[in-house]
Length: 120
Image (cartoon, rainbow, N blue to C red; front, side, top):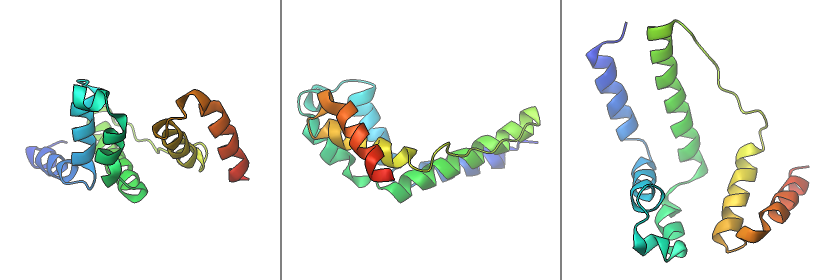
């Protein structure tokens, strides 16, 4: 059963996650609204997103999974376990993002191949 206290606690937990404000800012200024200040200067976008680190993203993922599991069990009676299909997926993703922001977006396939070689 879901209570209003559950909802309030989960909202507060999500609101106070490290890095959440950075993600909301990037969403509002670039991904959702194409603010011209960021659209014309992608390096500024990277500078603005510098406050996100791997442990913050990992924690966000865990909290989101916990919240989704809570409501899934409460409403549907279905539990799930989210596992990465490959432990290197996140590392590769960050490598591709780095290539993109370094201005090598036309060479992402090359960056991905190099990243796969470095995984082994």
